Image 1 (tube, rainbow, N blue to C red):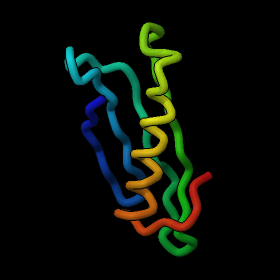
Image 2: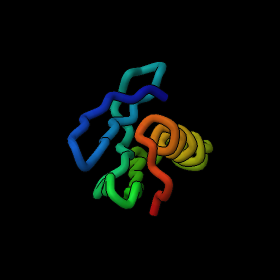
Image 3: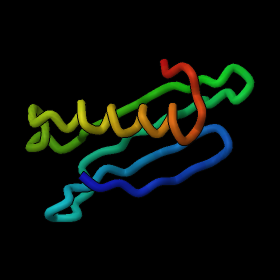
Length: 78
């Protein structure tokens, strides 16, 4: 899994690519970031069916929430 990002003040959006083929397979990120309350809303979409059931959602969720807590300083992900 590899990712590229688009960031704004209120969101971090990641494109998820297959590391072997560099093919875009989905998206994940944190939106509606509220710096005052230090929270944001998580989303994920793996659109390529051939990548379902391989544990990628778990891996992507872990990496994204780790980034939200440790790099963005958020305290809550919804």
